[in-house]
Length: 66
Image 1 (cartoon, rainbow, N blue to C red):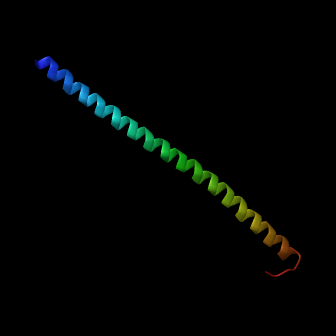
Image 2 (image 1 turned 90 degrees about the vertical axis):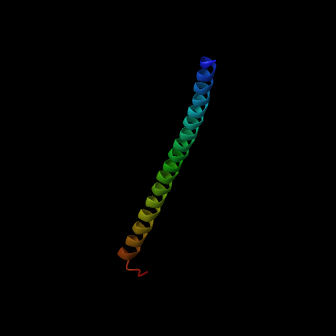
Image 3 (image 1 turned 135 degrees about the horizontal axis):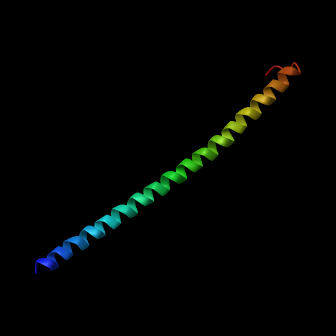
Protein backbone atom coordinates (compact mmCIF):
# COMPACT_ATOMS: atom_id res chain seq x y z
CA UNK A 1 0.00 0.00 0.00
CA UNK A 2 2.77 2.42 0.92
CA UNK A 3 4.68 1.65 -2.28
CA UNK A 4 1.60 2.38 -4.39
CA UNK A 5 1.19 5.77 -2.72
CA UNK A 6 4.90 6.50 -3.09
CA UNK A 7 4.84 5.55 -6.76
CA UNK A 8 1.72 7.69 -7.31
CA UNK A 9 3.33 10.70 -5.62
CA UNK A 10 6.52 10.27 -7.65
CA UNK A 11 4.46 9.97 -10.83
CA UNK A 12 2.60 13.20 -10.05
CA UNK A 13 5.89 15.01 -9.35
CA UNK A 14 7.30 13.72 -12.65
CA UNK A 15 4.28 15.07 -14.53
CA UNK A 16 4.58 18.43 -12.78
CA UNK A 17 8.32 18.53 -13.52
CA UNK A 18 7.73 17.70 -17.17
CA UNK A 19 5.11 20.45 -17.43
CA UNK A 20 7.41 23.01 -15.80
CA UNK A 21 10.28 22.02 -18.08
CA UNK A 22 8.08 22.30 -21.17
CA UNK A 23 6.84 25.73 -20.10
CA UNK A 24 10.37 26.97 -19.41
CA UNK A 25 11.55 25.67 -22.77
CA UNK A 26 8.70 27.48 -24.54
CA UNK A 27 9.58 30.74 -22.76
CA UNK A 28 13.25 30.38 -23.68
CA UNK A 29 12.39 29.77 -27.35
CA UNK A 30 10.12 32.82 -27.38
CA UNK A 31 12.84 34.99 -25.85
CA UNK A 32 15.41 33.73 -28.36
CA UNK A 33 13.07 34.63 -31.23
CA UNK A 34 12.51 38.09 -29.74
CA UNK A 35 16.26 38.66 -29.47
CA UNK A 36 16.78 37.59 -33.08
CA UNK A 37 13.98 39.89 -34.27
CA UNK A 38 15.48 42.77 -32.26
CA UNK A 39 18.92 42.20 -33.79
CA UNK A 40 17.43 42.20 -37.27
CA UNK A 41 15.45 45.37 -36.60
CA UNK A 42 18.50 47.14 -35.20
CA UNK A 43 20.59 46.10 -38.21
CA UNK A 44 18.08 47.60 -40.64
CA UNK A 45 17.59 50.71 -38.50
CA UNK A 46 21.34 51.24 -38.30
CA UNK A 47 21.68 50.86 -42.08
CA UNK A 48 18.85 53.36 -42.62
CA UNK A 49 20.42 55.89 -40.26
CA UNK A 50 23.79 55.63 -42.00
CA UNK A 51 22.17 55.92 -45.44
CA UNK A 52 20.31 59.06 -44.38
CA UNK A 53 23.46 60.52 -42.84
CA UNK A 54 25.49 59.77 -45.97
CA UNK A 55 22.87 61.41 -48.19
CA UNK A 56 22.75 64.45 -45.91
CA UNK A 57 26.54 64.77 -46.07
CA UNK A 58 26.44 64.41 -49.86
CA UNK A 59 23.90 67.22 -50.15
CA UNK A 60 25.88 69.45 -47.77
CA UNK A 61 29.00 68.85 -49.84
CA UNK A 62 27.12 70.04 -52.92
CA UNK A 63 26.00 73.18 -51.07
CA UNK A 64 22.36 72.15 -50.80
CA UNK A 65 20.75 73.08 -47.50
CA UNK A 66 18.13 70.83 -45.98
